[in-house]
Image (cartoon, rainbow over the protein chains, first blue to last red):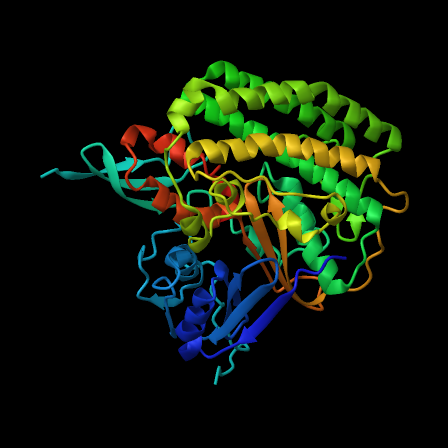
Length: 128
Length: 359
């Protein structure tokens, strides 16, 4: 079995731009940005490589958090950041080409967003 | 001073097999800015993984695209197999590789036909699609499907190809090889093709790398970048070398695909020559726990399937990054400075698959 080596590095949102700058300075290309909804939060992976060994920076964010755009460093990142905004409803600030929610037209707004927590209320009961 | 106007290109256009919209900001006849938008065929397939058994989901992963279908199913299977530590038998790896190369041949021949059609070269268009039928015949004979095969499964493949049939496939490829070479010669040397594509929509090697271009789009700009070099499936045993061209224009992106058809014929011949005996699948027990990023080289370029699982039969997340999606920013760069009449040809040279890109 051929292993495509992949290292995941968890970082704080505040460190995202600095770390991304470091990859850019080392000549890495941006492979992808992908978001995973985990019920109460979201994981976002920023994947870079120079060959077939991949490295991903991982940040964890909540609904309402602001994520700084890396499109000032990797110009092509706008496509992923707009996708994350349109499908998950997360706010990415200062994207170089901001489609304002119009990159991906979906029938339901933000279809991949975490479902809001629901408290079942028994008949005649109290939700609190 | 020139006036600027905005011309909407797509989502319906004779040159586009699938819907993509680009707002072209023009100064006279020249594009100064291109703003793409997609979303006309968003199906939300990634979300379905939360409702389907991870083994059954292979068939949905295959339907992400109607051309790179088989490679999508293999990439998804690779991710699950790595998470579960499943060792796929060598014979299954070789047969997967053969079908992936057949997919590449039929995808590239489809594209070469579309490119010829976009240039108004109808004979070349019909010739490319006639050759594609020969490839599809073998796909159908070995899997039962022309574009959706349903032959890959977690742990291996559903169908073996008997050694006798493998020999017939090689004989068939030997028979059509001169026709493929003749088609390649026309794309390389014909004045009509060269005049229409040489120097058009140039993407430099640096831009291709910086903007995340993949596949023939990157290799047509001189980037020596092909996931098959990493040796997944049986590629590590077949002496694979990427095809690259240096100019970064529409013609070189075309020539990469044209040459890759012949390279795929060679790979199939080598795979058949080295075909190991043995089982074609490994039993799958339990459910996956963990995460993995699997990469393969589809006809259109590097494709990534990310799978995150928590030990249940339904997977937590399946994220697919297709080559077309990452080739959109390079396309925006290629279109800057192009004449309006050349836009369809330039858009076509990234081989856009919007169904794939939107999933």
